[in-house]
Image 1 (cartoon, helix red, strand yellow):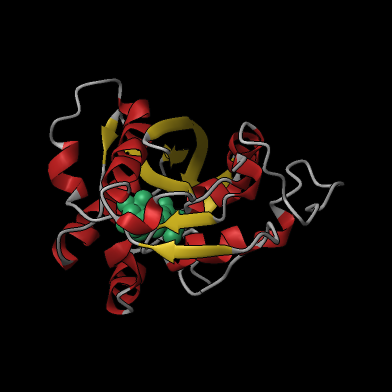
Image 2 (tube, rainbow, N blue to C red; image 1 turned 135 degrees about the vertical axis):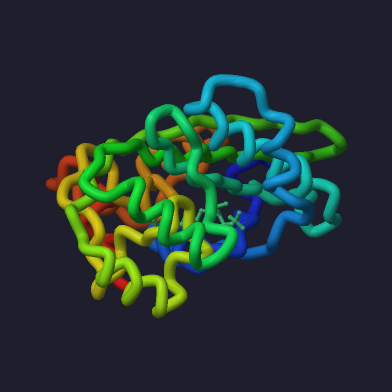
Amino acid sequence: MTTTQLPLLLASASPRRRQILARLGLPYIVSVAPGDEDAAQAHYQGPIDGLGTWTATHKALMMFTRPEAANHLVITSDTTVILDDQELGKPRDEEHARSLLRSLRGRWHRVVTGVVVSTMVDGQLRMQGDSCSTPVLMRPYTDEEIDAYIATGDPMDKAGAYGIQSASFQPTERIAGCYLNVVGLPLCTLVRLLAKFDVYPASQGDAHSACPWSELCQIRE
Ligand SMILES: Cc1cn([C@H]2C[C@H](O)[C@@H](COP(=O)(O)OP(=O)(O)OP(=O)(O)O)O2)c(=O)[nH]c1=O
């Protein structure tokens, strides 16, 4: 079987990633990689910008412990929010969310998403990974806005405790790169990785946009 014929499996619990991947027009199934990502990340010792790709690789390896991953093209990714060379992670609780949002207020930081595409065919693992980095400037939101946003529950499953796509909070003032990367799955990076397996999108994206996939995917929650 060639990799072109392998069905896609998105190994992710993130509803955003599911929505974004659908834009390629390719059929895919979804499963969730087992394991504790935080515990795994505690062993990481490389440069902070490599953490996303390292964690996406870990998620792929965990996924291949499951029988459903065999004979699939498995997509994993991990989004990290980096402020002053520190990875902020997801909030542990509301107080942590408040402190993360205060530390980001009015500041430029980076959102780095690592993406890995991999296959296990006849016991042979093949893996391609890369990352995408987007500088993001937060607007000077007030403490009251932070509290109102936390009350929605939205920050709790998100790196850095924010969703750029939040229509009510709208936390960012400017971004200098890929929007979908911030939401969790840079299609530009993914399309490049899929091409290494001879898999190409069924849909074309908006060929006139700087990133052909960005305009299509302005997800709002
Ligand atoms: C910064 C930012 C992050 N996020 C999300 C993307 C990711 O879902 C999440 C970061 O956590 P991840 O660990 O990357 O992903 P996940 O745990 O949600 O899903 P899985 O590991 O199963 O694939 O934060 C946004 O939705 N908007 C944003 O603006």
